[in-house]
Amino acid sequence: MRFFHQVGVIAAKDLRAELRTKEAINSSLAFALVILLMFSFAFDPLADTTREISGGLLWIVFAFAGTLVLNRSFARELPNDCLDGLIAAPLPGAALFLGKVCANFLLVLGVQLVSLPVFGIFYNVPWTRQFPQLLLVMVLGTWGLTVVGTVSSALTVNIRLRELMLPMLTYPILFPALLGAMQLTATLVAGNPIGPGEAGWLKMIVGFDVIYTAVSLALVDTILVG
Amino acid sequence: MSAVAVDGVWKSFGDYPALRDIRLEAAPGTCLALIGRNGAGKTTLLRIIAGFSRPGRGQVRIGGGDPRDPETRRQVGFLGHGISVYDELSALENLTLYGRLYGLADPPGAAREWLERTGLGRVANGLVREFSRGMRQRLAVARAFLHEPRVLLLDEPFTALDDKAIAVLQRLLAEALASGRTVVMSTHQLREAMELASHVAVLVRGQLAFHGVRTPEMAADPGTVYARYGEA
Image (cartoon, rainbow over the protein chains, first blue to last red):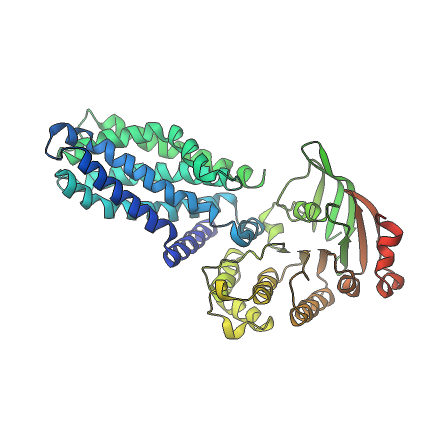
């Protein structure tokens, strides 16, 4: 129980700090909305091909916008050497990591939920028809994104080019989950439910989330202390 | 049992040996002043004792336990170069956060008590980013003392403190020592350090040049420590 209490304390701290400054969430949201708007000008929203690629397009926007939130995750601990304070505390690295993942997950998911109606309007897709399943895919895909992104944030926190390195580390690892989320989202935003043909993608995202969460929890102490 | 025991610790950064075969101990209720010129290895040694990095060779024990063990960390208070408090949070929120992480029974109560003890009670709800440098440093002192640790590790604790804050810190350290706690501090402010220290360790280019009891002669003229054991 103490472990989950500590996870909650870290997540609440990160959310409070972010909601007070709105540094990451404002830039992430603005980025997502601007890219969705620009893509809607680039492609004809009434064309069938646009609807077919809209799932992929949506996840490209989610991944790029999510990176802006994830970049701040451990970088937030740099001013005043706050990471030292957390490492000195009787806090398992896994609790620190999971707390940050939870905060990032909520922030990234929040940005996605605001962007989704805008996407529906600009791309003229019936995204509300399968909303519960779409939400499930967003939750699973976003968990994978935040787990891999938070590990990358911890790995790159002390290097100068961390804004560049984080996406370079995150996207290649994230590729299988991102691919699955894109395939499923394309089906769902077209108004069709997840059928037996797409269930494999869903299982792959669940497997990805479980494996990368377990590996990250096992490695985070080594990442933070060496 | 020693409160802090450093046994044959080596640490290298690339090919450069920052610490070479350091062996020292601090008994409960003593104050060990780690002194040395810039780059002598004081901060590296303190960070290894605090468990922030692992030694290349040798080992560190705090109260007989591994510095990375959560139960050991509960017994340690660390005050480093950074103040380790969040600018976006208030003083009270910062200390309450650490109180919760250390598992205190009443984190907000302990936070308020330590804000009063460090003279920050009236700005408890003020955001840290609005604090002066001296106030931030006092908040960092409160954070290090908040969970009443058995061992205090302080890296340059008197730097950037005004006279009032130095007096507050010296009083808190004297109280801590009187109650049997152990203090290990690195410092360049020899006069303040020698007033508190019961033992002295001198580091020269990563090696221990002296480790022993602080003599009345050292207290009267702190410069003699460097003159006798330090670099020219």
